[in-house]
Amino acid sequence: MSAPNAEADLTLSELLERYATLRDTLLGLEAERDALAARIKAALAQGERAETDLYRAELKVSRRVEYPLDRFRDVFGDAAALEVATIDRRRAEALAQAGDLDAARLRELAVVKETSALVLVPKTR
Image (tube, rainbow, N blue to C red; front, side):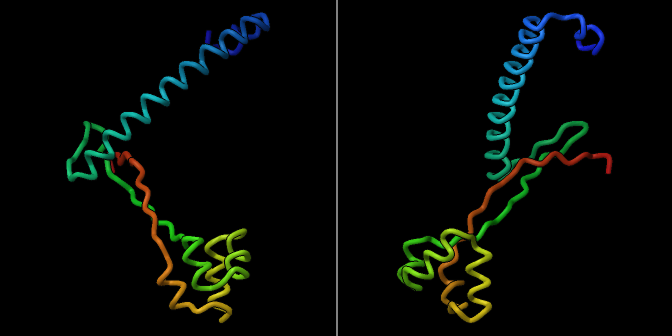
């Protein structure tokens, strides 16, 4: 039923049924994939290795710098906190570069958050 011409002959209710089936299947597969990824990531983070004939699993770590609002406000005041709280890290760093904020104190406030993603590396490289 995956051929485009076969689907052209279906009624609207049959199309809806097929759509619902595909959606439910994809949601189930995505949930299973996410659960498997979480288990694999946890094992890799503990130093284990995983590979198949085609792939090797690796963790790719990303880091994101954030400034805790309460500490930022304590150091730089309400006006600066209000100005950067509605924007982002880049704005705070731009203010520091411009000399409006103390760059060293801003760096001291920085909190680096890490996230990891499961990456399948083809072994045929």
